[in-house]
Length: 306
Image (cartoon, rainbow, N blue to C red; front, side):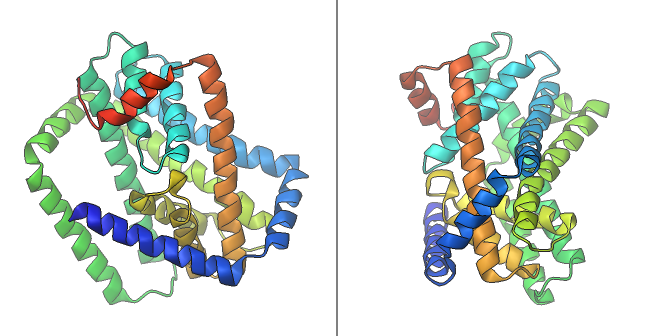
């Protein structure tokens, strides 16, 4: 049921992208914007450094979660392997490689600890993204009906309750570990670093949209990023191609950006993220090479805890 819903939603998003491509694709305009970015080192530096710092913040958060018992390089290798695989595979299998890197490089960390840390930090990511998305729906002047927002909130709450009770033992176990790992100021820092990481990632969209001559506030861009990234739970294509663009076009449109400009911004933003994933992924492969058979094993584990 869950898989069918995900596939149906993903197919609808891909179909919407194909329709938007037919109506709004301006290859010449997109190439002109890409050339404009390429000839502005300051814009490129702003975009790529913001994206890198977003991952660095997540790396520090992961290190803190494991009580500083791991190297920051291990966290970064895991994050970049995850990023690269998520952009190459039609499913989000990168997190299992992230767990594998942690287990392989840090003998002091058990398989269960590695698994739990990735699960909890992913849950924190999701919670922050949905919180920012909800805050935007509440405070930004968007052309959305209040009843629609209420129904979305009700559906989200009911879904969360059902999910919790269906996997109650699993969640109780993870929550117990999370309380121990995130107590006191350490928990505040983990939350803060994770929040900052998503604000920094929004800067990528901000740089592209402004470079295209469109006006948008950074607060609006944070909301656009949170909606777009949260929507990748419906990913069935490498890197969420089509679904990423579709959601971002609608989010930018809700903030007053014309459809054709929003389409170009979405395509360019996603393209830059792909470029970044290949650059840091290539560097990571060179610095810490992992055999292909081991990568395949990690991505097929699907949640093995040991």
